[in-house]
Length: 430
Image 1 (cartoon, one colour):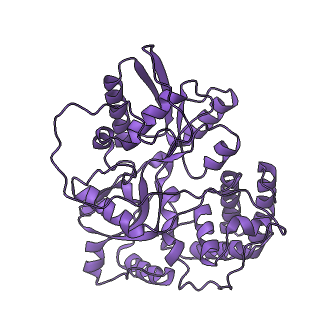
Image 2 (tube, helix red, strand yellow):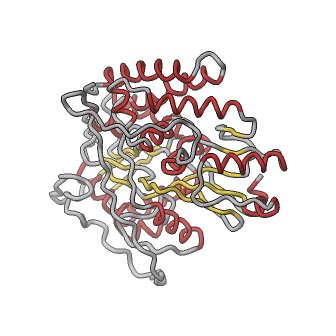
Image 3 (cartoon, helix red, strand yellow):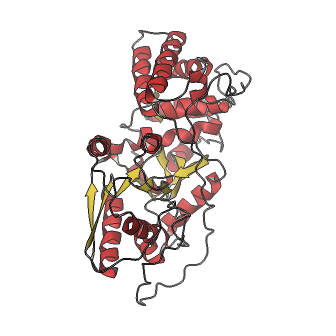
């Protein structure tokens, strides 16, 4: 496997990092030279024709440019109890009335494991040392079980003061009025395809950057014939979103007007994948390429990285409406996301810092900054209510297609009809 050739990628297997993060990489290149039928971009429907759930456009500051890092000083840490954005910029309108000397306990729920969990725990420890009287109780749950846990907490009105959210779940929490503040992006990532450069060089194969799906298949077939290693390719709702975007459309708007064009293209692609032994959407196996997020990279000294043109937040943090300590939670989040003290702890583990100047300190961080900077300029909108259930529905129809129980046009018709009902039930005006 590629790790044996001198480079590693840090995976969160519970989170399904391959399937979850990689797919946006193909937003621009995947269908640019595909053999799938291309249609003229269709205008989105007017409000009179149909409406879809409101989208949230995430305003993301431009990543801080690289500069030489100054030596870390051992001076006394900066006072953390200052609200840099005065409670009105990244956290919404959360006034700070000043704190008394009473003991205060904050709670935070996150899905992080491994190095990111260690970094978060260290930041919490330092903040508590700097602020006597503040206790922060952190709950860390692996990603698969995280959403069921906080959904139960929400139903009982017992959400933590601060929760971690991702792109697929953000709309649900906002629209259910479960958040007191705006969801603040933690760091910026992009999506990267890694190729085993040494392997390709030994085989005399070159993959252009950027490349089309047809070119990727041609290279993948040669590698498979020579080594037996498969080519990792994406699938799922993120890819379906990308297919619609490439056509100049929006998949949720298409669902709202019962348009199956992008869905049919997607299912045709899945059927093609199923017919080729050297192509795989599996997250496990021996591949000559890997699709990852930029903050998952540990060492790429012998790999070639091809970044996408899309950048997005790794995750979001938000203060919940159930919090009885919103002011203190706001101060902690402000310190966590903006202070140099916290920045020296979190570094680039959660993506390229957005609200502070933390120059890269090693080749890994410089590489991450370079990748994110090359992908900056395009941002993904937040999916509407019901998107998570639509993702499960898409996976079911994809499985039936692979088993030969449906043809692409049948799968597209049935999927769009079911997705329409999901959006309608979720509260979207369709």
